[in-house]
Length: 312
View (tube, rainbow, N blue to C red):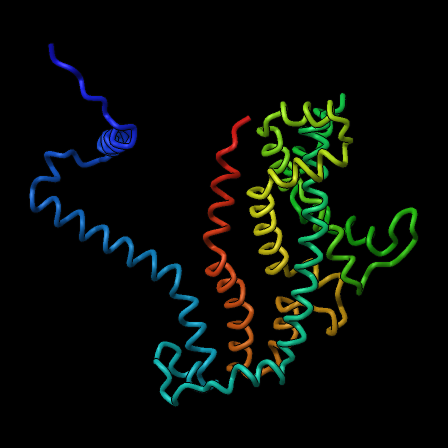
């Protein structure tokens, strides 16, 4: 009598993934066994990767080249590699002469405030809709979802009038960071994203905490937040990137040059600043978020994957 040797789970999963990949492939195993097909597939793959790298990295590399060139080289030979030599002095000159350092500090303040208030609204709003679930939760969820279909330009004038004279408070928020922080906090997309994540958390944990006497705030602080690190990472990334590149709204509500972020400040000095210093300032404004993403990409990608893996 023959005995069947059990297949290890890891080997079974590998075989399943291999079979699935073969079924999803446009080229069969028989075709891949031919040399011409293999060579053609590899060449096309290399060309596709190179094309994607050129599209993705080309503008950034050109900006780096322009940031370290003279104004004459940028205008006369825009695609030549430093005919007059590398001008490292452009970076400190841009930092001091066109006040990139001050604009960068303002940008950090804007991004930090938008991150804090945006996270506060998204977490509390998602907690109320998905965990507390009052009777009117579906109405609130539908109302928040409906705002996603309203273009931001449509509400621009009404929002500006609101920050000119805040209802009930009667204060003018123009020329303060509050005029940028508070409107950006009301992100319907972030609230729905967090609510979707919270809806997939095990409710047995919440019920057990309530039986033990934990209140609404204690459940939120001690149970929900520690379990929500993936979605917190995703919302943080989306909020910081959106606030870093925002241009139109800070241009309207921050007319003072002392408060303007990089996106507005570089536009304001674009008519008077030398071309090479302007390019150096643009490179500084672009390279900082890119470096931060490269440093924390593992955490960001892991958080995004875990946030998307939760099912309701």
